[in-house]
Image 1 (cartoon, rainbow, N blue to C red):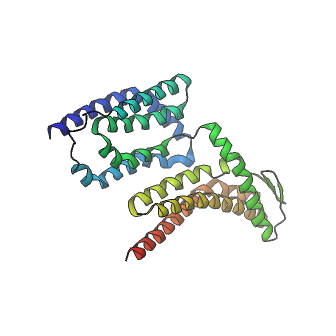
Image 2: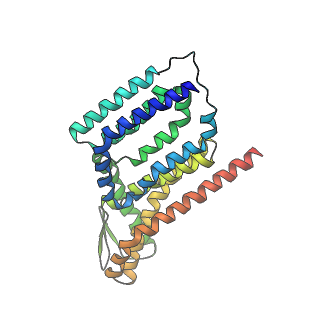
Image 3: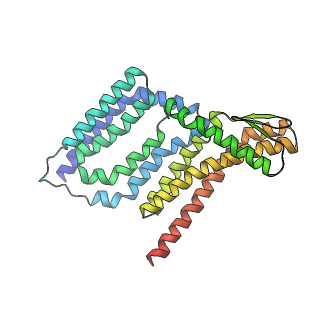
Amino acid sequence: MKDKLQSFVLFSILSGIAVLLFYPFFSELNIYWQHERESSYVVLIPLFSAYFLWVQREKLRGLQFNRDEPFFSKEGLVLLICGLGLFIIGRYMYVLFAEALAFVVVIAAAVLFIYGRDLFKITLVPILFLLFMLPIPYPIYFAVAGPLKYFIAYMAATFLSLINIPVFLEGNVIHLTSISLLVHETCSGLRTVISLLAISTAFAYLFLKSYRSWIAIMAAAVIVGIFVNVIRIFAIGLLSYMYDSTVAMNFHKYAWGLVTPAGVITIFLIGYILRWYEERRDT
């Protein structure tokens, strides 16, 4: 009990220091996410992470300290130093992604440093889940979203041509009789994919047992995230052909609020199918 109390006090002190150290970063991250409409889900990430820990509360309560091991983990100390170093570099170079990554690393390092490997293993997934809060570095974002926007445009144009709608594809521009649709990086569906990956990870952690099911639902999240954005562009093109560009653009304003819930529902359906398959296999 004394060891646990000492560890809790030390962890609380380090947490307080970390909050003071990272406070400017929190303000900048909040401003960043306020300008990212499609990433509004990030406010739920810490809540899910906390819920994951609550689910594991019995394991955490039953964990006993091994007094044959050093009180503090050397690996945790090294990781803590690396995390703080990364934060300093990110702060100096104004790289928000590096600061955000450093915050997650410092949390993981503090747990490993104070509580050791056993508790670290239990809390690893809840801590790593915080990575979904990280802003995507622009070089990585454009490297992925660039080719993806061409694929989205190609698939949407293909679906339109299959129902005999006159369409001409020029790179990432879909030319129709009444309108030309520019599929920008923001229309690539990358942020939708990441949000669905977060949801699929949460579902897998809470309800799925096998790693095959984890891989299956996360792969499904990528496919569904891309597909719903293809449908969004296809629907805009279809409306512009059936009605006019005004109707199509009005739909475009609210399309994200329609396709994302559709993607979430699809992921839940796939998840429950995988869970049903696991239960049937185990019986």
